[in-house]
Amino acid sequence: MTSITLAQSYLVKATKRLKILPVLLEEEAYSDVVREAQEIVELALKGMLRAIGVEPPKQHDVGYLLVEFKNHFPKEVQAEVEKMARISKWLRKEREFAFYGDVDFIPTE
Image: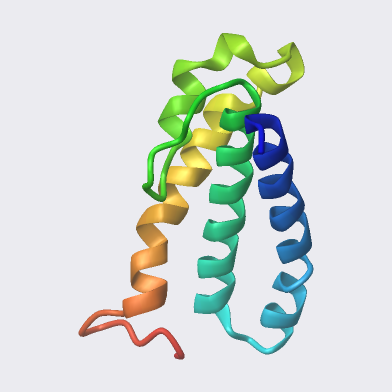
């Protein structure tokens, strides 16, 4: 398996998982929407990194690497890299609350 093949696989998985978000929204499963959205973004960004030959670390937020390797992407992607990095960082933080909750935050409420 090549890095490009794995990158394509990540992007296919992310695209397919997007289809579940409207169902979760309709069910008012908002914490699950956040969790799934985070995983979709993570897969997509890791796929993008692999496509340019960067081995992504095994962590949830890799947006900072998109910024670091920004010049390796096409110009139209470069224009959105900072936005993608911000979204990735925010979702990584919200993912923890969405999954585990807290004393004053119940994920199913």
